[in-house]
Amino acid sequence: MQDVCTDAEMVALIKEAQRGVPAAYDRLYNLYADKIFRYLYTRTSQRECAEDLTADVFVRLIQVLPRFRVNAERPVASFSAWLYRIAGNLLTDYYRRQRHRQHADILEHAHLPGNGPTPDQQVAAAEEESLILQALAKLGEEQQAVVLYRFGEQYSAQQVADLMGKTAGAVKALQHRALTNLRRILSPGAEE
Amino acid sequence: MSRSKQELEEALEACLDLRKAGLSDEQCLLRYPELADELAPLLLVAERLQSQPWPIMSVRGRVRGRERMHATLAARQSRGHGWLLRLRPVGIALLLAVLATGVWMARPGHLPPTLGRPTVTPTGTTVPTSTSTPEPSRTPSPTASVTATPTATASPTWTDTTTAVNKTPAADEMPAATPSPTRTPQPAGTSTEAGDAQADSASATPEPGQSPVPTRVPAQPRVSTATPDPVKPTQIPEDTVTPTRPVTETPRPTDTPLATSTREATRTPVPTRTPGPIQSPGTEEPTETPKPSSTPREVETPDPTKFVVPSPTPRPAETPQPAATPAATETPRERDD
Image 1: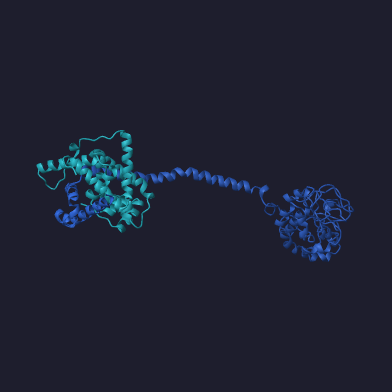
Image 2: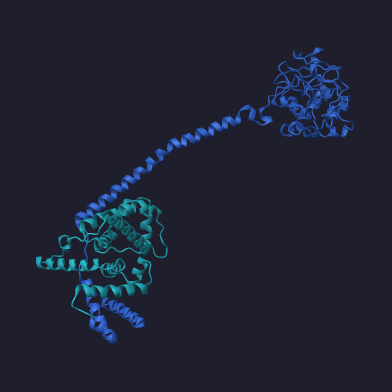
């Protein structure tokens, strides 16, 4: 269930959160927890770790939100970008602590989406997810982000550009390169 | 190449949008026949990404994360008050520092002359002609002491005294004593004379206040008797000066009011200067002389009437006379009489 928030709502929500209203933080959590989790999961490939880091992001949010200034022109985009940046910083800290990036056994942690799939379907979905996550893990950070935002979060090229602080043309180029690389990774036999 | 690459990126983006709008991959490729070979595999990967269920948080992880967030929020909000409490000692310390500074600044020595002065009662009798003589005995006020110093001019003191007289004639000290009305007016000049004194004299509101005094003066002859001041200065001027000074006074010159006898009193000496020794009538004080203001008075003294109209200013005019010449002996000691 994608919770949607308009710019005006986002401005009001942020102001409430800055005043310390718990309900406002709840709404922000509902809006962004999964997105942040996916962002972290594609980077860490570890569910537990990604969930912990996601919680860390919201704890950090409470600490720094009072200093956040809303961009009146693009409240949602600016806030989203800011939140992803927090997640990226925490991830960097995490890697620093870990010293080395561990590619965990994705299958073990793969999430099995509900909606009543049969066990076979669930296994197949889990395998597919793991393949894609493995392939994503081999991309650079920016390409990963573009793929996640464009295909995971369904953002438009312009929204991704806003989130990443790039132009739409740059996002399109990144998207092209990312898909080309993924194709190579996912279908090794296929050559251009 | 770069141009075709850019075209490919644009075509890929357009095909993704078309597919989102409901078109199939084939329909999209028909729009870009020249790029179809390159676009087809990319669209397949894109479809695979889009169709795949992206991971979401587990329920347990979601609940845990929310609880942590709320716990942090609650802790932060409660910590807000703790922060204020922590600042309390600092606030108290600042407050104490401010108070201490205020007390220190307010101590007598630091007060501006006007404020700090004890009112001097004008009891003093005046010596008629005498101009300023250094009267040791006088004025309690801080200013007085200042006067003592050579440079320090009595003028300031004078003024003060005068004022005092006006204000609290009976009230404070000497009852009857009405003060030496005469003296009042110290010309501005006087005050100016003494360099340092300026500040003092300035503050002392004398002039305005003085005027009233004169009036009184005539009426009441200052009775020297009234004030038998114990303190006597060393000498007595020739004239009668009976200073009624309250005993207490000490040091400085300033004012002696007029002696009754003489009546002219007005004149009060120009206190200012010279501390020391009593001056004999004829002697002038070199230093002081320059002050016109003081001098004038002496001259004037003779006329009682004049006093009545004391205006601060007038003095100067009167003064034509050389400074302080006649220095009358001053008062202080009057009591001897």
